[in-house]
Image 1 (cartoon, helix red, strand yellow):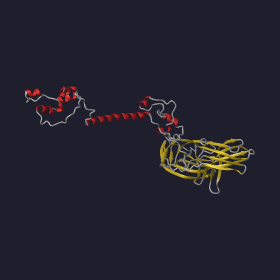
Image 2 (cartoon, rainbow, N blue to C red):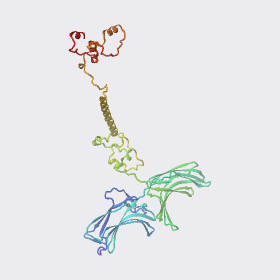
Image 3 (cartoon, rainbow, N blue to C red):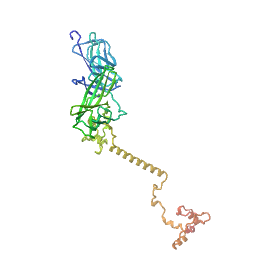
Image 4 (cartoon, helix red, strand yellow):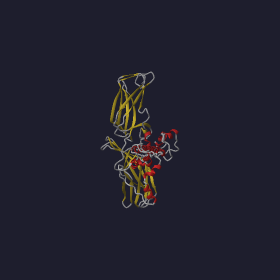
Length: 469
């Protein structure tokens, strides 16, 4: 074919995540689990972008009538390959007609792509999303496809009642089973109990199974297929009246999908809990109860989300000197003192259901204490300035004794009669200050002297007057 120019002369590769930040999942390509491939996970409303690399074979060139890229979402009926229903078809022209003479890389981008349903591969139906690159040529086109996996996230159901039902055979067997919820996410745990109210038949054992029922078609042409996902034996031997059998079933280990109802009027997927009792004559008594499965959003594990891992303490965390200088490391009681990238990578392996508040670290307490000390110093300085302006007696300077007048002159503040009265033990009566206008020169001098302290007499006094003073 290559000699006639009809064979493929190019190799096409899709680069969807050059930074390798998008999560991948292993997806089975058929229901027999014989073939599996890694596919990137996308969600509803996300952009789909990347680049297409077209590599030419040695010493070849390709003439084309244009290069077209499509994003397609479709439903295929595996029992009828001719029935294909497309519900999404987005197209872009990447190159105009021309000739390829060397390896080429072309970028593409589909913004805010609506992806209403989850990818699904079942027994009779397949729902897939894929990119299709077509190099339009004169005789035969060159086509390459790349599948992606779409997952639909759901919120916690507002109403999630428990399941409780009493079933049995009249006057032979009465049992009551109870499950804690009716809606479970794909990593949830089914918890329940089975009560035996009446037992008059010889029961050999009891088992519980998870069934998946896939229905395709509509109207009278509905074709149903049942698949057993898991089966466990929960009781061996004959029970007695009043006995209780606990149930605990983990869903995380099974390849489950969310419940799908009437997808494009083409198919439905439902899940049931099947309780089976087998007697000694191999007769089977069973009861099926439908449950709803939904996909829970995974925890975001990034470098900035260390708060939700605060309760995790890695073994023997290394303490670097620069971390101690920055106030990161402190007492051993703080579980996040030495949180680093390696610890976060270890913690990312865990699915945390709750986030914890980060406890107060020693560095925060030291900062608070420093602020209090600074505020105390500022308040003291402010108080001292206010007291100085208001002439507070506590801050007035103490006068030196050398600046004071000798206290010997204080003896003349009282007259001789006052001294005599003190000698006889009589109390001192301090007279009110009187005017100095009607006094003689000696008394007026004493009266007008400041604070009772004497200064040298005036030069106008005679020698006799000075002696009297």
